[in-house]
Image (tube, rainbow, N blue to C red):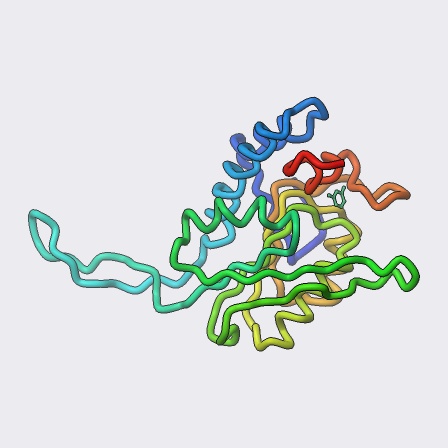
Length: 213
Ligand code: URA
């Protein structure tokens, strides 16, 4: 898929696209939705970690010694943007089990419409870590941009953003606020509707994964 966003990578892989289509279908059960999100999160994790720096470590195979490629000292932090971020977190964590984990909780003030922090707990030394923030839906981008602001205030300088679906409005907002943050997503959808939902989208990701309304 071609687009004009230099900060965006769309993972246009048949497995990702097939699983995403199943998730979009309105009659997909909560159980299947959650399972599919878990599976896609691991395929997206593959892309978001693609250019991690490698070093070599001397090992001995049953046959001989070799300098084997291993991930360089870079420490990782995964940050889940609550609550829907947790649906992406577990799958990514399975692939990167030694990563530290943080949580950012934001709600939208109904009067000012600005994101307000209600929970914030992140690993120490964010300045030394590759930080991967996860949130399935990049819609207006307001809460994502605010979460990235907070992570930068905590010292993070190397941040990537992993989502399932992105709207052009949200990608643009993130590009303006945080041009240094690379976004990885399974699809760039058409637009936001008047209620702020991504179109065609999949509805409310949190409600669909937790079975709430
Ligand atoms: N958040 C969601 O869960 N879905 C949307 O479509 C937009 C924001």
